[in-house]
Length: 230
Image (cartoon, rainbow, N blue to C red; front, top):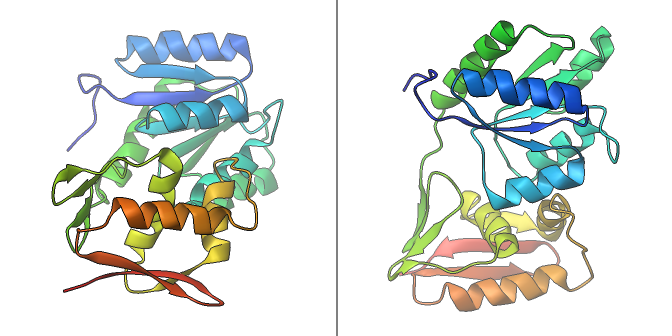
């Protein structure tokens, strides 16, 4: 699938400079993109929970948190959302740092909108060539958008945090996922993690996925393993 202005592409722009944010909204809207805005890292997390965009435009110099830290958290949680960093940081070491944090591309301000458009389409084309597939284990099916889980009887009702935990277990079916890795997944959502937090979520998930031909096994001292059962 190719990306062009006639396709409705949703973009979340995380930018605290109101002038640049308005410029992005106006010019990208003129090119046919649908743009949502967030001016802090915390607001970006809330927007990402509400709806997953096709691409994230991320300023690194945010008022509440460095954008590269937000990006590292997304990648640590297994989020493959395409990200282009838009920043005034133009030193090579800073560009390399942004790419190492998980950015797909890096554009220094001030930028040309036509170049930004070309980079958006290039990043989306690369992402499209690696379109995520559905994950199926037993009677459970994680949709390709990774936002919906289906069981034998249809959609399984999970909270966003339960879905994040179960998604990590599903993607590693047959392998142990440590408590530290699951804690990292929830921490990326700014979730307060207590000693029993993971146990509580796993208990809830077990109850909700009963009857779908899978089980979550506790591997004492390590973590959890999800597997299909006969």
